Length: 265
Image (tube, helix red, strand yellow):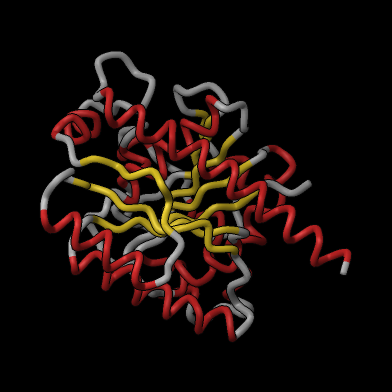
């Protein structure tokens, strides 16, 4: 069976997309899934949580644009069972170069094809953009998770991204199942959080039951390069991502069952 390939995508920045990509990956590893994180963002926030960016000499750009063997770019992280295909500023050039590539929508999948047997899940951390790299990564994905912060702009950003993704779906570029929309940076009891929940529910989008709370502890975790399960990390953040991991596993299994039924039909 091919690995599940989950794209974490949002059009709005600052919605904890990279933080969610990393901690969901760690949660899946703790649930015995062997995981590859693919950082497709030139800002390289996911990469920087594990490595000094000055130490990255081979990255996604080299694999997709220069044909470097993906195994040479993948790095083991300090979390046993979690590997990373890193990013760097060079990935900013990849978007421009992909525009002139033949079959550019398929380039990310083709670059990773030799790795598929090594993992049970691949997680793509996508930049908040609508560019060639994002389109190719979305085309490579089998499922999609969209985080949004608890704000009107966040809701509108999620809706706009999903409207755009439907255009890709109609063009047969995107086939990924939408696992759900994840509400992040939640301040329980505030009016803006209540209004955001209502707006999301009225939109008809599938919401995760789990919400990620807004905590200064999350900022400390990033500053200290910590992930869930590390000592002295925020308890609420840990519990939320453990709960999210369980929901994602259930929704992935449901999506796989639907795909299996459709393929037999």
